[in-house]
Image (cartoon, rainbow, N blue to C red; front, side, top):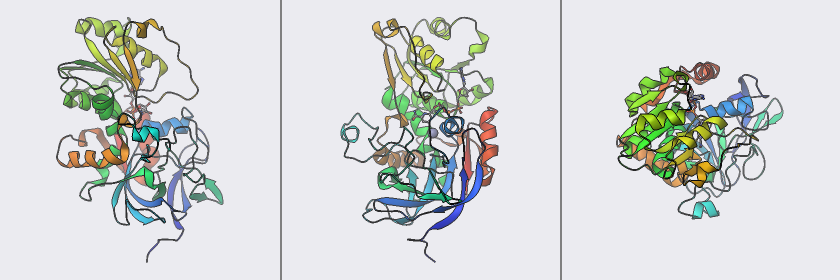
Length: 374
Ligand code: PAD
Ligand code: ZN
């Protein structure tokens, strides 16, 4: 029996309040309105950004359903939707692509004006499609994937090859694409160059994959957790170091290790201090540093402007600079053509109901990416 046009009752992991555990609840998911799409989620990865909402480093309204790295299948479409149809395999996009705003129209831009990085928590018409225990539940970054069904705007969905394995390509919805794009699109890493990557989680390892594919000859991984080194070396890092092993600033350590040749650095942790460390670690004159880690909300940074005056470039990117609706299907095609491997990034696969166990694995530093399946 078709569910189109009807409210769907299903399970979702709701965050009722800040710093509270996920609560698996029965929720009601309203049918999609005009220019919206309802999706059945097949698989979703756990990203540090979801935890930033749970802990308040990223501001959000509560109750909320987080999760933003997923694969799904279209269950039904609202009036006027033309780019997907029921049954299509899709990836929800936390950076939309409306194709009309200045960022979408500029060849260099990707941060569509419809992006919800400030925590509005609603769809384009200003309302939510989720209800739980009689209360509206907010959306997260136009995606909300820790639920069996979600509703997104048509600008936040990309149709992908039906042959793509859902439990792998979900990583193209965030972690992989963010890191890989930070290296090849935002940093524009050049062949033969030396790169340093601060933070070796799922996103940092994807930066390493991007640096390697761009032909970097030396890639130095930096993490406090040495258990992350093995994976980093397998994915292309040429050496790894822990700041705990040194008393002097990491910028000096890197300069000595490389004869002052680090051209690109990437901060993939989300800490203010390491953002400045990464900036100071790229070459004083022609170096480029890319902020990939999500900055904590409402925190200010102070740094010596001499770091920039001498010529360094400081950049950042959301979703690796990709134009989401155009590029996500191409990245899936590249994955199917074996241009990159996602298996190495997936350390755990768990049933959706075990979501809290997945977050424990993130906190303990044991996981790279945990993928939840439905
Ligand atoms: P993760 O928690 O899996 O990895 C972070 C890594 O940093 C871990 O291995 C830590 O051990 C390591 N670490 C922590 N503190 C330090 C330190 N002081 N020095 C060295 N290493 C340290 O996170 P992730 O890979 O899922 O995400 C990384 C960041 O990227 C996080 O802030 C997330 O919110 C952000 C992100 N940004 C975007 C974007 O579009 N810009 C997308 C996805 C994730
Ligand atoms: Zn993410």
